[in-house]
Image (tube, rainbow, N blue to C red; front, side):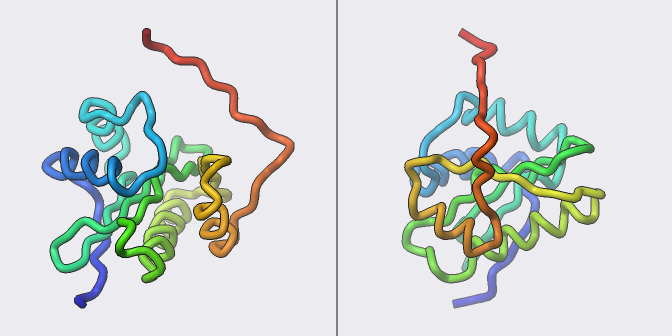
Length: 141
């Protein structure tokens, strides 16, 4: 097994990333299409971080920074590659990015039903902030 390689996604990666999320990510979002992810990578280059091992995409995280807040999305590791330090490496890279950009606190979107993810996030030092709820509104039909 070779070392883990972390890098920012480029346009040529996006179809593979979307296919990867169908296998490795829990749930989907309205913006989980090529146009949505392409807008992300154009607006915030470096936000979508990929983990590769032996030429295979094995993990992702989106480390989005809006100039004020640091948001983590789509931390996903291939089911057959979990518990190998990939998520920890991705979170480390995301946190380094945030620090470099001037971020002071990171938050993560984690599905309530994804108990496995709760353990991983807690192990990484994150905890739920119970006094907040996410309110959403679709801007498309």
